[in-house]
Image 1 (tube, rainbow, N blue to C red):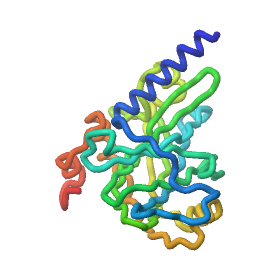
Image 2 (image 1 turned 90 degrees about the vertical axis):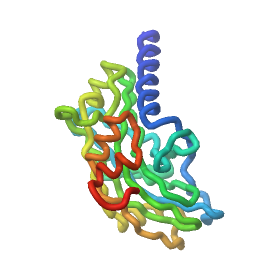
Image 3 (image 1 turned 30 degrees about the horizontal axis):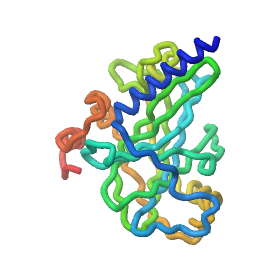
Image 4 (image 1 turned 120 degrees about the vertical axis):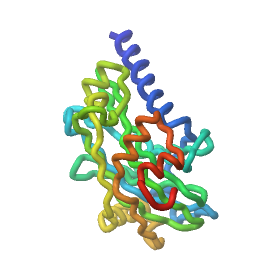
Amino acid sequence: MGLIISVRRAMFLLGMMALLLLSGCATVHEMGLKKGDSQLELKGKGMVLMSMEISNQYKPDYQPQIIAAQIEKPGAKSKEDRDNFQTDLEGTVSSASGTRYLLRMELQPGHYIIRGALCSYHSFFVMASCQMPVHGDFIVEADKVTYLGRAVGVLRERQGEEFRAGPIVPLVDQAVAGFSGGTFDVTISDQQQEDLSSYKQQFPALRNQHIAIEVLSPFDRERAQLWWDSNGSEDKKTIQMVKGKGEVL
């Protein structure tokens, strides 16, 4: 039995590595604000707030958890251009779908893309991983806190050549959880009233803080598909192709 579990764990790690390779190596950070912080000190950086929810309607017995949010600069080529922010218990609250994650990401000023979230399901016999896409552009300004909205991902059965929710390996685990045979429908919306109330309840340092509202554009499924088809590559030409017209990001 121990050997079987070890093999499953090794295959799970291979699956997670496949996701990480797809998104590129990244610098890992903790969330930038804690419950015990009495005040917010950005010191020239900016902070973005965003909530996330995820559910598996394809295989309801296998509900994934979000373990990290993926942020990168446009045209990212190296680890220095990518940041993964680990979720934590302090920013995890109950919701109608089970769990809501309150992200608090501290970044240098500039243009960024939130690619999505790395997610996983763990049980004694099944270890599987998936990636909930977002692909939303945002701007970070010095000493400014900005709310980007709420991203909700619903995993359903994949049709045709739609992007997969997760990698194929480990074969059994990914299939059982529905991650290799599923895809995500994602909605992005302005839920500032509920979200900011939760943020201020959880993190006292935000209670007297001005928070700008700059909700991400609606989820662009074509952009997510192109990113998946190109193995995690997105250059200005690709973005222009997706947008069809207008200024290149």
